[in-house]
Length: 532
Image (tube, rainbow, N blue to C red; front, side, top):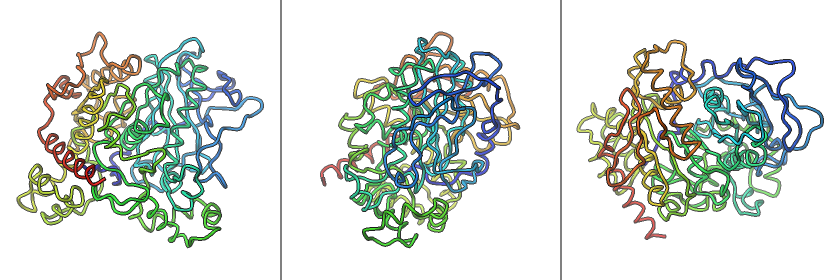
């Protein structure tokens, strides 16, 4: 089923995440130091306690510029002396998103950040590596300030930039021909893999345990984690996964060169790349790659901005993502790790403009989504008149996120792994109350950072403490349960329940509409499997 990841979010969302998360942390004249594989880093304190330290803007790969544009990330060059790690690195090239502050960007953007409260190689604390959302076209590592709040609970927190949009997910026949893996695109996923390799090699020096790594992502960051779970290249790089409002196995993904009929996908990865190359005035030929790599990044973004039907995202490329994740998960070939996964009740209320206004437009949208099964989808989310369409459309979008999380919990449970399925329902009392439990709202509670105009209550404080406890305990043990918080049972197909996180905390039945989406997906999957 189609998710709303590719839509721009309204300016409401920026108020939620931007406040207090982009400011510089206080610097000190002589900060904590640590030696990593490439050299010595000098960090800084992020709080008043002496042991609360951060290392910002740490390079984890060579700058992907010049001949390294659209190539797998290369190792960092060693440096002499001590490198300051007190400011966030440049964000990766991206167009203004409208829903977050625009920061200076640079192609030299492969940097990560580390927060720890025990800078001791013997500490062996669990590690959380966070990949930001933003449709794989926008965002940056400091977008959600999880580091201070979560590291104080006994984990080491890492966040990372990765290549985005046409610099991070550009597939093209000439790039495919250049690759020894006969693949192109997914450079952003390769960056995430490289960041995880850096963690494996270096995190013990920050007090982290390289054998207890939890990957965590929200929105497209969660989608990417799902894709890594379907990738042989990620084997051994993490031991648990937290996915908030994003999945890859409950739908179909664009393929590098084979058209996909479902999920509103039109075209192929290479076809999209060829279209951008044509927009840039670069024709096929022996010097096409040289010309493409010589074009300044801002010109590439400018050309892309004029043709927004061209969308760049992770694809099935035959190497990093070897086949459709729906197949990988259905056959139990994904990474077998515990997962904590869920969605918010009102995900799509902050998404931008859509053109689905009438019943006919709604049915056409469903036809692009599920083709021969669109009638079943319409019956599950009916609209008897044009006036009913906005509400039906919104219910479908919200429940598509919930179905993705539900599907993930089922798939992982079948492999014998524990899956903890949540449904976030908290509605604030202030001006954003009409949005309900919107996309990304849970990040406020995880970071303990809220917009200035948030109307705080004891309910906020209580839920924030509980959610942070669950997430950190899961990173520590693979199970969120610990004394002092309500018991959260692992998902079990017989009960078919999720765990509500909101003003009410506890089990609740999975919505029947999710079962309808499940039936549709099973039929689509059976049809496509038979065709193959």
